[in-house]
Length: 219
Image 1 (cartoon, rainbow, N blue to C red):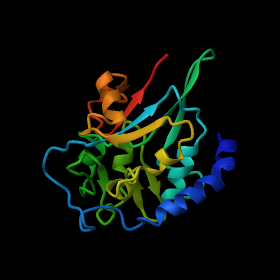
Image 2: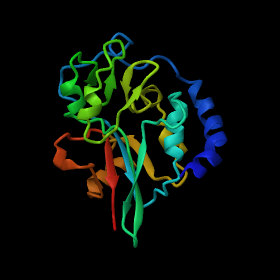
Image 3: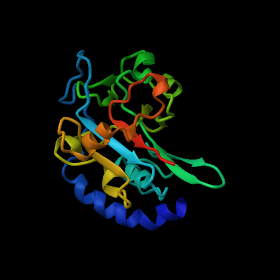
Image 4: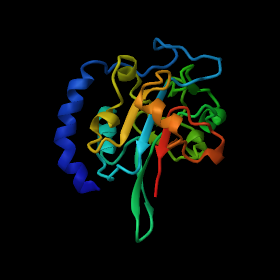
């Protein structure tokens, strides 16, 4: 996978640099312009990962790293090789933006919170780096930023999304395995996939009720 990442690094850097000029401000957190809500979250967004198309090239992993200025070897996305000696496929995992997130439940300072639209964010000013959320996340979707002392994760590139764009990982996906859109548009590709029953949440038995991510797994 590393070979693929290296071959695409320049391509991704150029693509993301242009998009970053649109909005590379502070993370959207309380005090940063968008407030948390006590209402039950509902998500108008869906990011569907089609595992029948994912080649495991790692472009999404590297795009995420570049977009978020993470050090070499770190990303909010990690890949799992699934299957057996006969059939192999890739499962890319990141924050599921759960409606019932264990990471927020265990956070002693309420640094992790759920927006009204279902996106789970972190208020870095409140995070004390205790790493309880890293342990609590059943998807292993958190990383610890040593420089900032923050337990970080995917934030859905929300500044781009609110501006009408898509997350960096979606932009970078060469085989088109990542489909992003609004669930409140019945004609969107994500709405149709969810309605068809082909897109399913990852580990529904965890009871976290992922608000954003679904997967197409066949075979």
